Figure 1 (cartoon, rainbow, N blue to C red):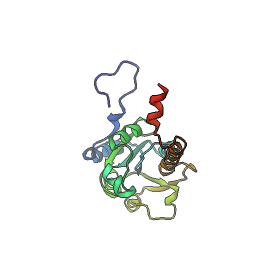
Figure 2 (cartoon, rainbow, N blue to C red):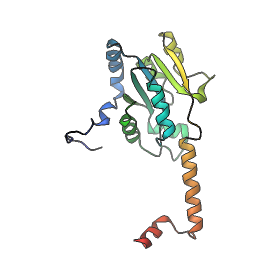
Figure 3 (spheres, helix red, strand yellow):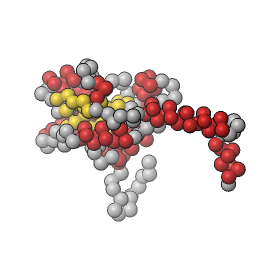
Figure 4 (cartoon, rainbow, N blue to C red):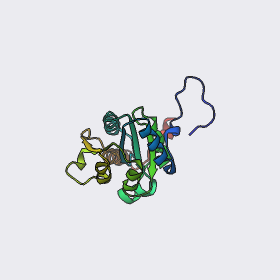
Length: 191
């Protein structure tokens, strides 16, 4: 990410909203003292897409501050398999923090956000609609402190897995139609 002073008129650097894990508890205590309603959600957010954006916007509408827990690279690899994440955690965090509906992002190394939720103690815990009827990690902590647990329906047909599958299909088709040549050799020819 670029550093140094930004020209006038450029919005703040989103990386300022990526909070080190050690600062999460103090940040949330300050927000609660200010009377802010904290909403928490989490995920891998490997390839940011319209489904993510809509989900996060709807989650943010449930409170004053949306804190997104982001799985670390090692965590994503354990959960999704080799070849994932496609983007490094710092880049994924920067993209999330660039969304106006996201107040803060915190990266966590565990496979579940249970410890992070214990540090945040949000007023509202949000997960995608695929969790409806299932035990949501951290829901016990949130409910024990008088908070609510909500599920938000996903935008149909939008997922990182489906985007990666479509990209792989396109690549296979491209290789098949080019007689085994890669896109690189074709672009060199075109220039």
